[in-house]
Length: 175
Length: 175
DNA sequence: ATGGTCATGTAACAGGTTACATGATTAT
DNA sequence: ATAATCATGTAACCTGTTACATGACCAT
Image 1 (tube, rainbow over the protein chains, first blue to last red):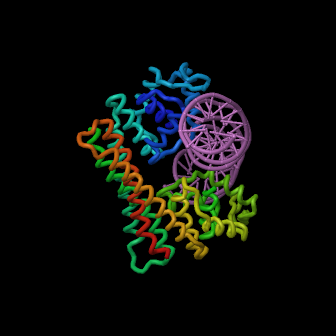
Image 2 (image 1 turned 60 degrees about the vertical axis):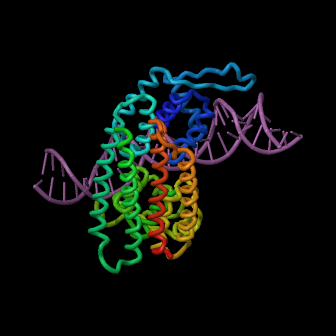
Image 3 (image 1 turned 120 degrees about the vertical axis):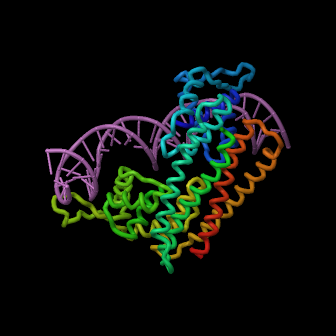
């Protein structure tokens, strides 16, 4: 349930139609995440039903059907709650990026604490991978299979390293 | 349909039970991908039905139920086909790691071509992101919102950079 | 006996993808 | 006229997650 929060953030920045959201999503978060228009319309419908957003038929749209969505108080509250909540491990990294954007609209809610928590998690994981590397892949003259296994592990290591490098360049911005 | 190919690769390395596969998956590919045992049993069932793998009840298991799976010719063929095929954009990176492992068991099938194709794609994407960065985020004295938008873009940039660094350290291993 | 590991599954549901479908407006 | 863009949806399907369920074997 994270697309909903991405959409809420986008709508707080500017009330929009589903179509506009789909385009904006691709340009603002497209670097790391994509959402299809079908998904967006589905989630907008759900959020309207939940009372998080209000759908208004645009009157000066002529024959064209056009609904503009805006965030209601309940939506704002839900987004605030979610920003402060620690993310579940599998998608916490992606969620953090949305939390940072959400904070830019809503004011400080604890996203920097979440960033620090994730830094700690990634540091531990990197440590673990490096230990495995030292233990299993520091022998001379490895076989082809071993070299490829090592490459897979290296993928994990450089991913963690680059995440941490980014996080440390980002932390000062939110503190 | 990529878990199936990961499982085929794992089974070629060693015929196993679903339980063993679940553990091995976590240790060999866990750096970037996780599969639950429910998923694994589901896919093993499908592959058995498709004739890609053979399930044999282990006779020397006593009262314990235990099925050992091994890859059949059709499974081998499907895996070979898949390794040579260019991956669809969204999960090509993850798939490549499995393709490299598959090649280590099956022999050369074109995974290095796929790696080169992905390097080209990532180079272009990195170029695009850097152009956006220069165009939109090189002004002096940015607002807090702009700084956070920039951080999101930076996330995309460092991800691409680290992928490319890994790819260039890996390419010599498969050429 | 109690808990941990080995071992295999079913069922419900949430999230994402693909295909299909419609129709107005705007630019060439 | 024709194509591109704006705009909104439905339906089927696949994948992944969570919850539930069972039972043998083994060590303490």
